[in-house]
Length: 509
Image 1 (spheres, rainbow, N blue to C red):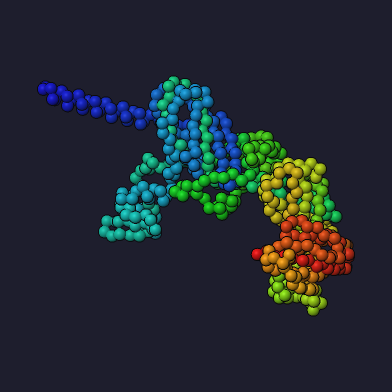
Image 2 (image 1 turned 30 degrees about the vertical axis):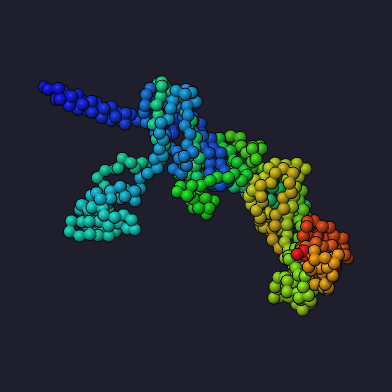
């Protein structure tokens, strides 16, 4: 054998050996299943995300190998995945990681067999016998196109039989990691990642007492898991507050409607354990005191708070809205239309928008005194027959301890307010300068009527633009903001109260 032949033979042997080594390395795959999980914890955010921390005990060999971590969320944000050993320090290195979420489905099978041959199985309509006919898959988008022996068909003219299962398709998602380990043996590992599809919100139910001065308040946390995987015996934390996240346009994201919607077939469970809340950075972290399971496509409710005899007050608040303070014409004084008004009511002026509010203090004196996450507060009250009736609901914002909560429940049926402008006159510009271009004095009459058999306390707010001062008023008032004057009045049972005031307004250039 000449020297060239020896070199070629040696090279060939080297190529074969290298190829065999590569195949050996590719075949060296470890799989970590849910049975190896030792602990899982979740921090769930109100924007449809969660931070998962998954700990497992896995036996490694020394060297380079592929590790498949199974039973992870199919909606994992792969770029957030972090993998580390808790027991070996720097002796384990992650070289590559891939999220494998190409899951088995009829559509995925068809797509994998594009350009390949499948069998179309038909059942004879009378004798039930089956026949198989080969067909090439030509297209799968916007309908299936098949090339048969002597024709092309659209749709599926029978049952499709596939000769094999493509290796890339999986029954469940997995995170595949290429790892280099400097030692062999059992190690404690932690995989942390962010996932979409898990969200939470707060829901509050309040029961008012008969005289509407106290309520029993129950707060629930409602969790929805649409991440595609279950988390069993998980330590659960909830982050309250507005956390900024950045979405890449190329990354698949959920719409808001999908993010906050409950699954159609979700099961609902209740957990009576109380939740502790602590300040964390600029947010609040609520921790469930024991482990709980959050199953895939499940809605779970956890008790947030239970408070009895919370001091409350009902408020009837009427606000004038923006009125005309700078023109003799009264085009802005129309208020709300009221087609059922009598002539007497029309003479009283336009209807003023108003609402029934329930207010309470979020403090220990009111029997609460914990940070309240944003959510919906629903209020009930028992009627004279002892039947609980729903009387309104409203959103509450994130409310720290010591702040007031005020929710709008609806509109009063028996207490009405009408506003009418009674006078208007232009005033000369102040100081003879052009600092103000419109100066005026306006007279206003507001009439409050109460059809109830008990007196009602009413808050009236007039929105006034520019720089202003009340020069006369039949009732005491206070300036609560730059553009708002407020009166608090008592309207007698089956009676009315008339408020007259005059206001001078100066509008700047």
